[in-house]
Structure formats: structure tokens, C-alpha cells
Amino acid sequence: MGLIIIKTIYIFVMATVLAALEVQIEAGSGWAKNIPTWRPDPNKWYSKLYKKIMSGKELTGYHFFMFGFVFLIFHLPFFFNLKWNLSQELNILCIFLIFIVIWDYLWFVINPHFTIKDFKGDHIFWHSKWLFNLPTDYWGSIAISLILAFINDKFLNPNYIKEWFIFFITIIILTLTTKWFIKTFKPEWE
Image (cartoon, rainbow, N blue to C red):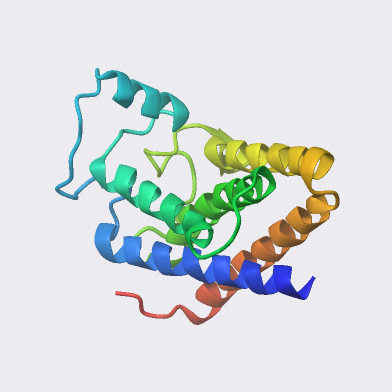
């Protein structure tokens, strides 16, 4: 269990650093609204596919390359002697899907321009669909991650689901602790 906690803390720190970097880049304008980035024709097939997968969000070069870079980082262990197998791949995908949710949420937690108080559907144009006070993207990523964890547990790696729940609960606790810290101490991020 100790190794899972250490791995979760590391993943959480990565998400926090990435969220802070995005705050520095985007400031109070989410979804690369004011960034001079590639914005392909919305009528192209890949733009439509991206929009469908991403709950109506616009494809931007910034997000395409940022998500791609993070996805490659998560696969880096395979190039440093971790033997690839389907169980390891499912593990990485499970973690990645939770990571992108936490990374996005932390953007609101630490952003002095667009605070957690504004974490509502009517304030966030890029999260247009909400369920139980969270964007449906979050629910979808968590659900897919959990389904992949069950598949991994059932067919490839018995007891993986226990690891997944330890990871998930720990990352939620770390996120809530960070939210409390920011709200309590209001550090200057600008």
C-alpha cells in the first residue's frame, strides 16, 4: 500500500504543477481562449471527432499537444525497462483518466483569476454539461477509469481494483486538502 500512496502523491504533484503552469499561460481565460494557438476548421472530421469525445470542446493546438505530451509522459516507463503488457497499459490508462480530471479541477483551485467559487456551469463555457455539480467529462473519465480497472482486475491483475480505489481515494484527499489550503491561506499565485 505504501508504494501506491507514494505513486499517488507523485501523480498529484504532477497534476498540481501542470495546473499551475496552465494558470500561468491562460490566467483567467480558460480553454486557450486568448492564446495564439492553432484552431483547425471546426468542420474537419478530426475537429468534429474531438468535439464529440470532449463534450463539445473546441480542438486547439495547445490542448492537442498538451494532452499528447502528458499521455507520452505516462508511457515513459515502458522506455526505461518496464515491460509492456496489457495490464500495465490498463493501469496507465486508469491513472491518466483520473489525472486529467484532477489536473483540470486544480486549475480552478489554484487560479486567482478564475476561482473555485466560479466552478459552476454558468461560469465555464468549456464545461457546458454538468451532473451533480461536476462537469460530465469528469464523471465520464472516472467511469471509464473504473471500468478499465475492473477489466484489469477480472482478467489480468487480481486485486487491481483495490489498488485503484486506494489511488482514487488518496488523490481525492490530496485534492480536498489542497483546496482547503488555498482557501485558508490564499497564497499569491500571480
